[in-house]
Image (tube, rainbow, N blue to C red; front, side):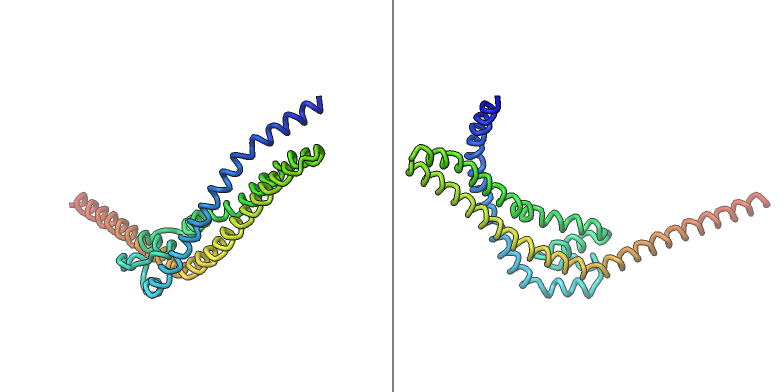
Length: 211
């Protein structure tokens, strides 16, 4: 019973090899794409840095013509002045989600792709098949190297983007508080006007009734 279970697990583990290698190749392409995005965003941030400073010296939504490409949180806050800090936090997590997930998945997939060929390699060692050992070890080491390269690239990008988003959020916090205060003042003013109109209407109604 145990032997049959071991054989079934061994055969099933070999089926995982092709999907795992395909995923590693796809994640490697993604890491190159993320690198290109990072370089482009770095250039955009340098080009639009003055626009970002202009936003910090004004009110949110006052000048929607500002070019804030490269500053995603500032762009969102300027287009939607009533956005909350919690909503910006969620947006920041969304911005980081891809590279953070890949930086964690790639080493796991690399480890799977390393361990799967070890079974045939050890079996080849027992049978004296040196060529089979070398072929399986080449696949195993190549997979783990790709996994670590992908993880290194995406982890570095995630760390830099996390710092960028944190700096944006800290810089936008006073503007968000000011925008929230203005919204409350407008709401209170509207309520006061409605109350005043109701009082005037009541007085006028009482006057008409007395007449």
